[in-house]
Length: 238
Image (tube, rainbow, N blue to C red; front, top):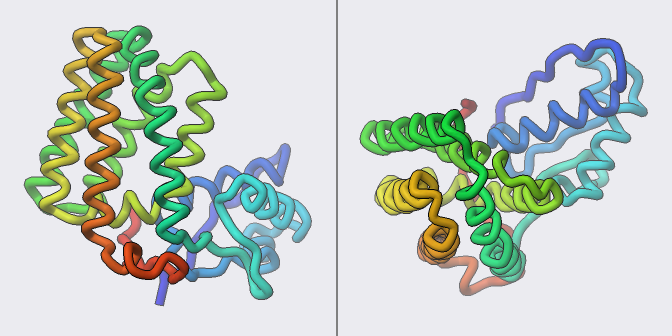
């Protein structure tokens, strides 16, 4: 059974926005297990606020594709093989271009952050620590994505990354795959250091192709049954 999610007390200001950010972070960190329900009245009671700001926040997350509504609460959407193939197609179209942008705009502080995240990912892979590896990978992605000056592009990519969270948890928790991912991260980092936009584009394209291939190998049931739910074991909290 999934552990109950604890939300922090909200402060003054826009309650809906505060709840939205907390729930979205919960999803991004992999703390909401597939099938686990978020119930607006329960969250409101935990936070000591009325139900409406919570429901409005959850409905916004439904509208953005992070959650789906059920008769007994809100949960992560079930992804079919077609869903995942479509998401990877969007990633192949958008992320290489964004990486090329980042290669031109990353500053010294950003490159230092990327180097630290890469080093952390390498150490986590050696230790076989899936949760630590997931966080390092996320830090690496968030850093270069934050350097993309086209806000609409970066926000769209971030949203699709959250939508395919179950894919990332599946691949990033597989130790042999972690070595492939680290090699891809290093290749992308080296392109950023050289400020080589063409290399960043090509290496990000290759990175995404590898990610899709590794996930499909780890999820043979998706290849056989397009309409069945994806059964992804839950990762521990960060």
